[in-house]
Image (cartoon, rainbow, N blue to C red; front, top):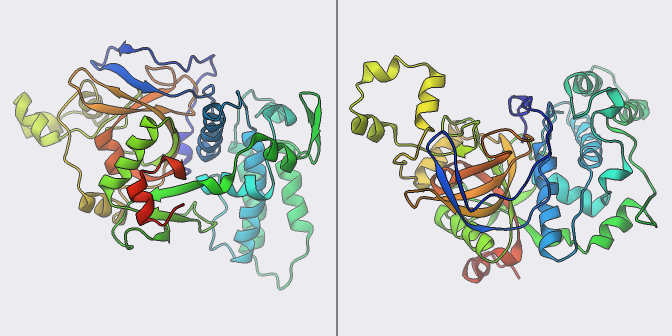
Length: 397
């Protein structure tokens, strides 16, 4: 998940992650919480394409709350450092055919936990502080790193030395901080691996779920997106069963990491994600085509997300077409942790974002189930959150 477009400039404010049982904003939506699971505080990825790191680590922090282990604050820049090291090497090995970019996937977090471990935030510098900022800002950092990696990966040299990778690590150390091999936390000494083991999380308990028809259902396939550069597999299920997994997860007390396309007009920057039926809305409002087309893109988007409207009916075929024609892309990673209804009874998932206090709900989004069914790329969830009848079809134990 990448696209620096989604690394917006927002102030870093103290966030209250509890959503009130009833919230109403000036945009005409009124939400009533049906179920809300515990999560850790909302972070701010700021000007960095690291939503994948913030959402996946936020997910595992929520898992530890579910497990009764207390509140953890994992280090996003440790995960980013390790992932960029590996992605750079993969790009060089494939002569640039694997892109070196800021984005990543949920599996990058799983892989890091299994192979490198994890550390608390306090074991590395706060993001941005090494170059005079208070939040992550990759504008300069990634120009420097990409210049080095692309120069090697796409160069004409006949033989490489280990020096380039040492140079890359120096860049990563300078901008993100050095990854500790040993550190002290709460009076105990740890390595990243021993700290990971102490959490009780088993990375093998977590699976990726998706829903597309260009591969057989109830089998695994490698989701064809650029940031899945580790070629991780996802379980493929019909759309209705994907939604059933999400519903069951929240009902049984499990959050899940949510990868989605947020470039749709219905994804408002004010905290709502919907898929309004434009034709039905225009007919109900008596709006003629000339009037509608005369509005600016911003005005049309604001109008479509100003209040609850009739939504489209999503089908499996629509999901596939939007994926195949690049309309649904791997844009953004977030954390789903609850369920709400609007004043008309329409159900929404409650979503923790990583844009600080952005939006009308202080960093929280409400995504309609219609939007989620249409625009979900994949989710990462504990295998025990999958309904038993679906898990059986997937041969999950």
